Each structure stands twice: as structure tokens, then as C-alpha cells.
Image 1 (cartoon, rainbow, N blue to C red):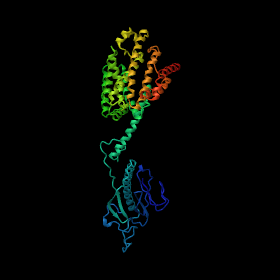
Image 2: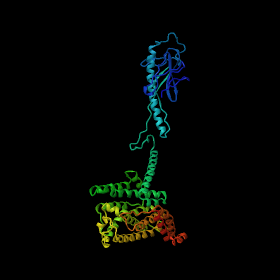
Image 3: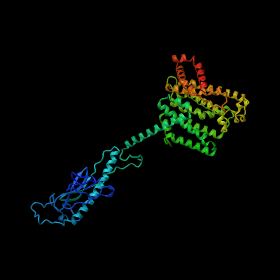
Image 4: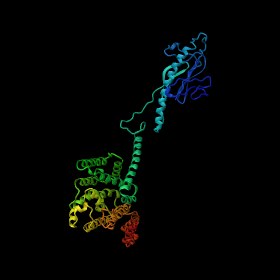
Length: 512
């Protein structure tokens, strides 16, 4: 900003009461009221706050500032106070008119001052910008313009030197930062975005998979976030088929799944499209044992939903269950980890992980028979329906008879066999992953109990696990983990396991 006079009694915007002060005309954008320069004052330079300000002091009528265009031999060579040099005749000194010439000189001086202060303003702005970015302000260089006079030296401010910005530097506010500082700034922003992305993954998981979400809360934070990121990707993949696009058959839905697979490959190689993809990429980076094949197989399972709505036998249904759910067990196994004492390689725990995923999907199929019928889909094997004397037409109409109950009873028994296979692999997992998997298995398996409690009517009554039963299941799952580890408490608990679960089932029925 333009500051006026060297007087100790200066005011900010008005004229100073001190007779030796003066004000200068400033541009309107500076917001300073212009004042005229008093004549019969000669200029001198005063440096305040690194700004050159010209002011006037009491003196003779002869100015010591060079008049533009005047020859050097005609310029004033007097002493700093404007008097002639010693030995010269003061009476013979050249004198100018006391009015008009001084006004012309004052106008030229003010133009120079305004130009100088404008450049100083720009230099200050540049220093402020550097200071804001953590760099020490660079001193504005002063360069002599080669014009001297008896009253002092006219100086101009050379424009500040600007550091060249790299062409690939697109981070906001990175001007003036070194390459290392830009990298650190990028990492800080990336970490903040990752925290928000993982939080959103947890929120989505808690909405669409309450039982699964409750089990993941017992995992360490880095494993919990990774499992949430994998689940959200699976959820988004499933929504391509079961979401609003469910009626977009053939070409449109195939194109969406093909694009989704291409997006997966881009994310896997470090080019995510959004924050949720960034969470998946970070998970892949943290757990290098993750493979892309289970993810691609899940997309192929979604294509099976596009191509067909019936499954002739259990082999076809098992392939579908592997692709859409068994792959989830293979995805999360590298995240959970295995126990070095009981398992030397991930492949040894792959079969139980695959069995758990298939068991969870078969449980969903038995629970959602009525909802799938509304969508025009039948996941129960047609040959088994025919064996028990139950037709697809009866299923589409929601008929619950004795044949249907026998069919469902057979399906429930088979699913429990897959749960038992999965139980044998829990002891092979890393200790910090045993309780979450055990709790998820126990809670989800109780959906089969709810189907039986509803007399196998999954057309008009939805099978679910109440909060009381879920709460009672957590300590039971912990005791079962102790039993699998061979502790004394676990062996003692094994005698009362079945009785405790029956009691919890009765309390859940009373709540309903």
C-alpha cells in the first residue's frame, strides 16, 4: 500500500496536520484519497518497510530533483539541502519560477513514485505468496536506473524473479514448492481421501450386510478396511444385475459388465476412477497376495444372471455359487491370513474359505426364494424340484405344501454340510481373524434355523436373525474359538454348546 510522508504525525487517509508533510496522487484501486503536493518543497527519499516513499521538506524554492530531459550540465549540483556549493555566488544561481515549473516537476516525480510503488506492491504480493506456501520471502532487488541528482538517487525496483513451475505440477497451491514437498503434499491429500473412502465402504457394508459387518468389527483396522473395500466392490458388481438395471437385458447389461471388468483391470494397475476404486487399489497394494482371478470370476457369475434364470441341476448352481460368493472367500483369505503353526500356505485354507462362501450364497438363495420368483428367477435345481414333486409353476405362484417343505428340508441339510466344512478351516486362520469369521458363520447359519421356525414358508415370511440372538451369539463364537484352539475353557464349553444355542433360539422367538 502507498504510504505518505516521513512526518511522525501522519494520518492514514487524510492530510497531516504537520506543515512539513505532503500526500501523493495514487491510483483509484489503492483506495487512497488523492492530495496535492505542496510547492516550494524539495523531495528526498525515505525507506520505510522496504518501500521508497518520496516526501517534501522545508527548504528553498530551488529543487534538487532533475528535470526530465534537461542536460546533465544544467542539472542541479547543489548540496543536499538545495543551497549552492561553497564558494559559488548564491545570487547568481539559476532560479526557476516558483509556481508552474515546480508543479511540472512534481507531476513527473509523482508518476515515477507511483510506478515504483506499483512494482513494490507486486514484489510484496509475490513475497506474501511465497510465505504462505512455507517459503521465506525473497528480498526485492533494487537496481539503480543511472539517474542521479544533488538531492539523492532515483531507484527503481526490478521485477521479482519467479521460479519455473514444472508442467506436470497440477496440484493446487504448489507454486514455489520443491519436488519433494509436492510429493508430500500429494501423499497427505491421498491419505485423507483414503480415510474418507474406507469410512464410506464401512457405511455401505453396515447397510447392506449387517451380520457380515458385525463380524468384521473384531478385525484389526487395516484388515477391516480391506474387507470392507472388497465387499463394496462385490456389492457394486451385484447391483449391476439386481439393481435398477435388472430389466436391461442382453446388450446393455452385457456392455455394463464388460466395462466394469475393464474398470477392474484399470483399478488393479493403479488407475482408479473414483474414491471407492481407490480403496480397492490401496487394498491390493497392501495385500500383494490378492489375485484378480476371483474378481473376474465374480463378473462372469453376474453374466450368468443375465444369460439364464433357471438351473437344471446342482452342478450348474454350484458353479454359479462359486462365481458370485465362493470367490469372496478367496478374495478375503489373503487379507485374513493364515496361522504359520497350523497352515504353511494359503492353498491349504482355500477349500474351507470356498465352502464358507458357497454356504452363505446357498443360505441367501433359500431365504430369498419368494423375492427371486418376483424377478422371474428360480435358483433351486429343477431336477431336485421334480424329484420332490414340486413344479416351477407352483413356485412362481408361491405355493407352500408338503412337497415344498421336503424340498427345503433337503436343501437346508446340504447347506449345513458346507458350514461344517468351513468350520474345520477356522483354526487355520490367523488368530486375529478367527473370531470375526466364526461370528459371521454362526450368525448366518442361524438363518437356516429361522427358515425352519417359519415352517419353510419363505414366500410370506422373511427369515432373519434378531438382535438378541446376534448378541448372544458373540460370546458363544468366542468360546468356540477357544474350543478350536484347544484351551481348557474351550473344552469345558463344548459340553454345553448345543443347549446354549437352543436357549438363544427360544429367546429370539419370544422377542418376535
